[in-house]
Image (cartoon, rainbow, N blue to C red; front, side, top):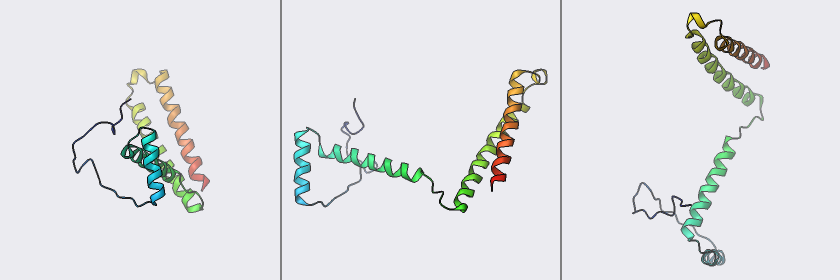
Length: 128
């Protein structure tokens, strides 16, 4: 499978940023030898490492900190706002159903969904 790094692109400022790293001589030579032995380019190995490192750190930042009551309340408020938007969209959908279909399963499902979301929102608001 060909990756984006395998393609040979011409130099362009929008695609590359130069980075220099200082490492102990023993580590640098070991890295060069390992890359040569495994038939991998040093550039490719470093780019893959940097991509993985950035992804891990981004994933870590996604994990929210709920250590204080204020942070937990803010998280609940954010969830409540999202649920309100979903409920409003479902209400709009239900209200656009023609009059001759208002007794249908489709209408009943939308109505039940709105009622369920209202209950969920009330429960979250009463938690704090």
